[in-house]
Image 1 (cartoon, rainbow over the protein chains, first blue to last red):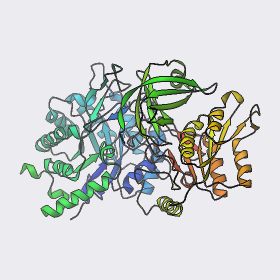
Image 2 (image 1 turned 180 degrees about the vertical axis):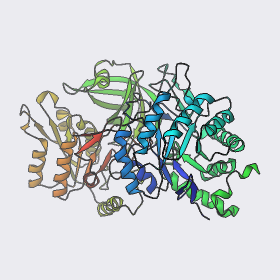
Image 3 (image 1 turned 90 degrees about the vertical axis):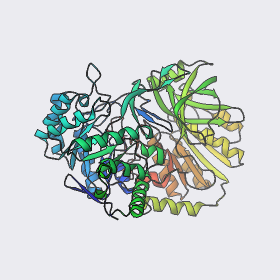
Image 4 (image 1 turned 30 degrees about the horizontal axis):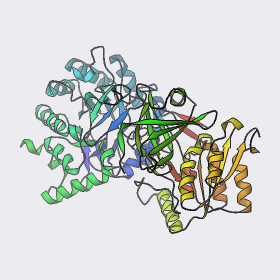
Amino acid sequence: MNLSTTFLGQKFPNPIVLASGILGVTAAGMTNVIKNGCGAVTAKSLAVKPRPGHPNPTVISNEHYMINAVGLSGEGLENAEAEFAKYKKNCPKNPLIASVISMKMEGFEAVTKRVNQTKADLIEVNISCPNVEDEFGRSFAALPETAYEATKIVKANSELPVIIKISPNVTSIVEIAKAVEEGGADAVNMGNTLGPGMVIDTHFKKPVLANKMGGVSGPAIKPITVKNVWQISQSTNLPIIATGGILTGNDAVEMFLAGASLVGIGSGVYYRGIEIFQKVNDEIQEYMEKENVGEIKDLIGFAHQ
Amino acid sequence: MKVYDIPKDFKIKEIVRNSSQVVTLIFEGTLNSIPGQFVMLWLPEVDEKPISISLDDPEKNEIHLSIADIGPVTHKFCEEMKVGDSLGMRGPYGTSFSLSGEAARSSESVTTSSDPVQQSHAVQDSEQAGMTLQHVAMIGGGCGCAPMRYLAYEARKKGVEVDYYIGVRTKDLVMFEEEMTSIGCNVFVSTDDGTHGEKGFITQQLEKNLAAKKVDKIYTCGPEMMMKVVADIAQKNEIPAEISMERYMKCGFGICGQCCLDDSGLRLCKEGPVITGERALQSKEFGNYHRDKMGIKHSF
């Protein structure tokens, strides 16, 4: 049984990727995730310049879901470059995915070019964060036209393979995935948080998150991820990172069967502790032994056959 | 222990002024916390801040949070709250001080056992296991006296002799002096300007007292430069120490990555805020720099 896998020409020691926005602020934080069994990391979504983000509460959680509106705070790629280099020195065999954002379409060129100067192995473009929205409350991932446009700009400027992180909050995920493929994406991450949603405190009679609304993640959203991965796998040739609700090895296998090549874990750290990465690896391994599966790639898309 | 990860409302039953800067909000209820733990205190529509617990008494059904008026949000906590108002709390979060002779309790492992930091931590654990504490020192700098107060109550209940050190800039900022004396602590006060207690740094009194008589364990909470001096003194005297470190926090439950320490990646909201002095001294951040809410480094 072999957990190692290849994705966009990069070797991954196992199919688990730290999702963006979780423990990805510093080299030390990301290195600790690798020490706990994760295969690769995605750094926090960054612009070129620092961003302050929202006041607290930014993240709250219960047994069913997590909801967050951190507001894309970050030190900016100009400051993160040193953290990236340190991470790669610590973990040369664990790919580093740089996640980038831009508030405006024209900003994708500069942010992509800035990533070219760093030690990142892959670039992931967060066109789907529900906290960055246009006047009608839409992310770039909400419409095929803007998803296509953003992908095309990044692809034209990137020296690295391009992953587009799309949103589950669309009428037709197939339409969006096809637009991204047409724009030249090398892969998709399916996907960002669901919603946005809202939690209102019944005593104070006010929304809890400082931003009032936030993206929903955690176990409740897993069936939506499975369905979206299934449809993208069926309608495009894009390799897929499945992110959204994965807590166990069985959840990961479900994503592989639906068509994912890798799985992202984020909120799961809340539900199972930082040990989740090793636990999920062990559980995938157990499944492969039980079902007599030699390699991860033998599982990818199997449910479609 | 029930942990609230979505804020729960708690009503203020009493407000006590402790110094010109610090106010204790006494809430109805209990969190079943342990000294050293903290809560995220939420003022709806404004902000939420990590605040260490200065007493949690299930018998009296009281939670005490002692807050220094140092910024716009803490100013609202200190000056605008009235008895009968409520605030939201998440928690209790983080590790706690240990009165049994072990190192700081941690709910999760930070790294694998091959990590040198982890190994030394484990060694220290086993060396101290089973040791009975008889005499301890608690060093609070400014509002860092708050978690020390909670710990002092617990230590006195167990019959442990407590040297309680209060270090502040000036007389108006001295807090808990009479209260700690009344529960049987040996209280030492230093002010920078000499207006109350001894003039100078509180660490000078600690060093002088340790030269005369060693203690079994040292605890500290306060400004990081002061805690660095305390950790160095503890190491020099071969006394185990527990340090309450603070970094900018968002989630409080170990997922946002904002409070991870260099180079171990230790999450101060989860494997901290209370860590051993040894572990603090191994972190290159300790006494040198911290990161702001964007993740940008700043020197102390």
